[in-house]
Image 1: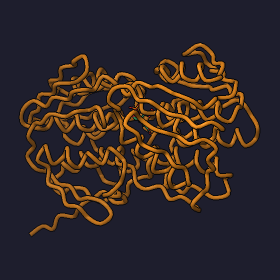
Image 2 (image 1 turned 180 degrees about the horizontal axis):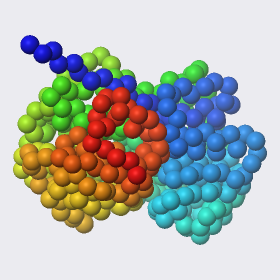
Image 3 (image 1 turned 90 degrees about the vertical axis):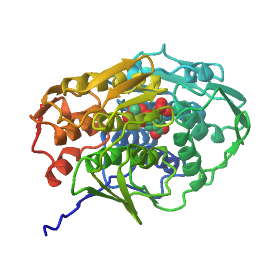
Length: 400
Ligand SMILES: O=C(O)C1=C[C@@H](OP(=O)(O)O)[C@@H](O)[C@H](O)C1
Ligand SMILES: C=C(OP(=O)(O)O)C(=O)O
């Protein structure tokens, strides 16, 4: 009998945790290191901005990293430092309100929204902050990292349900690792002023569940399966939810101590609420296209505010590959099929997660998938295509 060997992949470190740990480490004096196993463009942006701050420079280059920009903006304000943020691609047009208004009303002067460079000056003051819970959790995370530095204590009131809450939990956890206490209240959060960041030593960043999702979906298409190693099964990363989603589709999953093994099974359509897991949707939409029945992805309006309008770009790319997708105002309807996908020429729309979705789709396509602007993957996963090759899954992909 032929022995089937499971393909193994070592998952890269979490981008979300790395951003937070780098910022906390900087605030603790930078004596220790943050240790991660791959430097993406976004992590590089945060590192370079923090380096610029230590050198007393005010020009901060964020590239297209929303996290870098939205975390460092309130931080500069809390430190009372003047800054000029340089943002690229879609980032200048991604929203900043209501964080913008909160910074203005608490002591800062800011450039008009969308302007590059985006200038900030003034000293942020403690007090009462209000944010809507459904625009970006990055505003909440940014303020939670900045407000403990202020003299006066603050409250952060969240209006309406908090979406992407897993990311805020992650922020609170990393802050706790660096000696900062955030109190959860019914209304939101209470943040004591005058707190000090204390590094726990060198900080090891665990594996990235958001990026792992692409390999997990690949595994669900392969008879021999994939072993994704380097994942914390008890992680606070909200995108660990991919495991539950795969199970809902009927995928066979084996939990290991340091990751999961995943194998092909016949898939059934399901309904997915995207409000807490926006970054999983490109991978999940592809999986849905392989399932029997129609999958509905709901509460996904925020996907329009990422590196691309992800509801449009997913529909466009999967549509070219022969999937019946309906783009809704705040979601997607995806009619699954067992038939192989068509090949064809698709565009990443400058979006790393769309490029990765298209590359994984090629595993199930009859003809080659040519991906234009495939280097978009460098935003979060520079070694993605090398890994695809190592796994021998690159036969049907052409990069453009
Ligand atoms: O805090 C973070 O690390 C992130 C929060 C999420 O953004 P939103 O809260 O804006 O959905 C997510 O999409 C982004 O990729 C990373
Ligand atoms: C949206 C993303 O990141 P950011 O908001 O940090 O640019 C992402 O990684 O998909």
